[in-house]
Length: 556
Length: 51
Image (cartoon, rainbow over all chains, first blue to last red):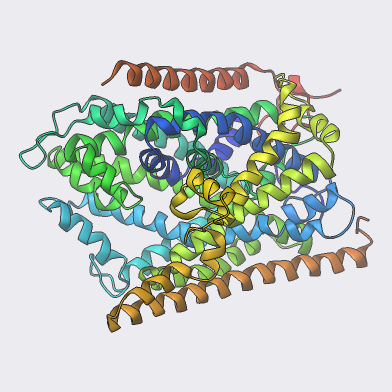
C-alpha cells in the first residue's frame, strides 16, 4: 500500500506535465492584465526578479520535498510534511496541499467549461456579425444558469459537468493519462499561442477603424515593455509581481509535491524544475504578453485597454476582435484562442486532482479509479454553488480564499518548514541529489533567507493591504501618528465584508441594499463550504493517522 | 514603438526563449540514469539494464 504503484512514462512527459500544471489561464489572462494595471513596463523588472528569488527557489523546494516524501511512500503533502518533521502538527498544515486543489478545481473547471463552450460557439459562428456589446452580453447570458445559447437547458451546468467528468476520467487512468494529455496539449497550446502572438506582434495600425481611429497594437506593446526603473521602489508593484509569480508557477498548492513524489531519489529534479519553470515563463512572457494586449490595443486603442483590462476580456472582447479578421479566420482564431485556454486549463486542473487521488491511495488503499471518481464527486458538490451562484459572488469568494490566501499561507509555511525545520543543509543536499545541472550556491542563501522574507512580505501585504494600495502614503501616515488605514481588499477587511458594508451605508436604494445583503449571504455560504471542506480533509488526515497508528507506521 | 521598449522586449523575450531552449537541450542530451529509474517507458531497453 505504501509502495509506489505508478511511475512517469518518460522524463519529457514529466516535464510537460509539470509545465502543464503551471501553465494555466493566468499565463494568458492574469499576466498581461497585472502588467497593464501595474504600469506596464514598470512591472517586468520586479516580475523577473521575483521569478529568480522566489519562483525558482519555491520550485526547488517543492520538487525536492515531493521526491523526499515519495521515498517513504507518501505522495500528498500531509504525510510528506510528516516525514520531514518531528511532531504531529505539520501534517495538518499539509491539508492545505489537498484543500487548495479541490477548492480551486471546483471553480477552475467552470472557467475551463467556458473555454470548451466558446470553442463550440466559435466553430458554429455564433459571434458572426455581433457587435462588441453583444459579444460581452453573450457571456453575461451564458453565466446565467437559467438561460441557454444552444437550446440545452442549464447549459452552463451541463458544460461544467462534462468538463469535470472528462477531468475525472483522465485522472482515473493515472499518471499515464495525465502524461498523454500533457504531451498532446502542451505542444498544441504553444502552436496556437505562436500563431496568435505573431498576429499580435504584426498587427500594427491595420486594425484602426472609424470608431477607434488611433488604435495601434504597437502602443500596447510599447506600454507593456517600456522599462520604468522607479518601479523598483514601489511596494505595490513588487507585491503584484511576486503574486503573479506565485500563481503562474502553481506553487503553494501541493501539486508539484505530488508529481515529484513519483521520482526516485537518484533521479534529477534540479534540471527538471528549471526546465518546467522556464517553459512556463516562455508561455507567459513570450506568448501571453503578445496576444491579448496588442490585439485589443490594435483594434480598440490603448486607452480602452487601460480602462477595461480584466479577466473578462478573454470571453467578452476577444471573440469580437477575431470577427474583424473575416469569417474563416475568425473561426480559426476562436478555435486557437479558446483551444489554447482549454489545454492550459485542463493540464492544470488534472494536476489539482492528483493530491487527493494519491492521498486516498496511500492512506486507505483505494484504487486509482475509485479515488479519481471520489475527487470528481467532491469537486462537483463544492463546485456547483460557483456555477449556480456565479453572479452572486460565490466564484470570487472561492478564488480569494482558496486560490489566493490559501496559496500564500501554504507556501510561507512550507518554505519555513523546508529551510528552518527540516534544515537548509539537508534541504540543499536533497535539491542537489542526482542533479543534472550545477545550481549556483547563492541559492542556498536565497532559499534560507530571501524567499521566506519575500513570502512574508506577500503574506503580510495581503493581510494589511494599505488603503488605495498606497504604501508610501500609509507609511507616512503611520510614522506621523495617524495610523495605518486598511484597504477593503485586505484580508482583515475582507473577513468583515467591509467593502460591501460601506456600499450599503452609502446608499438609500432599497433594491441595491437587498442585492448587497444577498452578496454577504452568498459570501458567507461560500466560506462555510470552504471551511467544511478543510475540516473534512483534516478529519481524513486524522483518520489516516489512526490507521497508521494501528499498523505501527506512525512517525515520531 | 520606443527604442527602449523595443530593446527591453527583444532582450526579455530573447533571454527567456534561449534559457528555455538551453534547459530542454540539456534534458534531451543528458543520458538517463541506470535502471531502475523513475521512468517506465525505457524499462526494457537492454543496454540500460543493471547487471
